[in-house]
Length: 109
Length: 107
Image 1 (tube, rainbow over the protein chains, first blue to last red):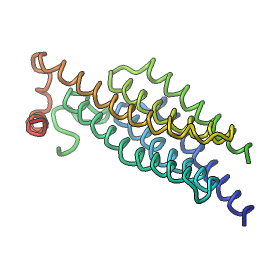
Image 2: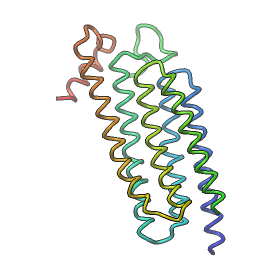
Image 3: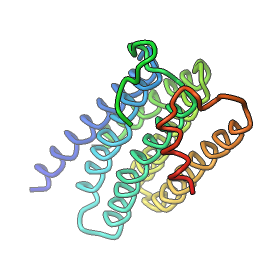
Image 4: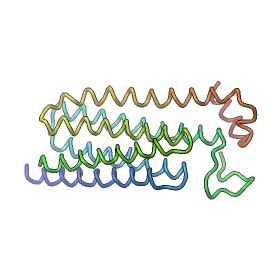
């Protein structure tokens, strides 16, 4: 049983590390601010929560697991909020998407 | 098992380096802010992983504190830049309806 939990935890950690790397690579390589936010959101929700899930599986049913869940909840609510505020501020500031046609909004507000 | 923890720690460290490169390169201030947000999230993960790697889960309290400071910092800097821009002429002219909606929300 402990062996199975270790396997599941290792899989979660590896998947989380993979998604973190993909998100950071996208943050560096994407051509446009909005696509960069899209890539970074992968890191901040999926990658972070998968890594935390792997740590929860290792911690077992303890106070440490409760703290990890608190961190996961914080990331899960706070970082999409920050991304939304960032893109909204960029939109208000006039940063246009790369493929937007001139003179017409790329999306409805 | 600590092998996996070390691998995940290394991956998160690489993420910090990539986000730092974006913060140095980023053409607009929003790119830099997004990179700062990403670095903050990565630092939380790094603290949690490092605590497990050393067998000292007390680092999780630091991670919680860091996360709270991170979200407050990003929102505060964003608000500073937004308000600092309100003095500039025609800065929000590009998006009329959205500007009105934003002004309505800010009240």
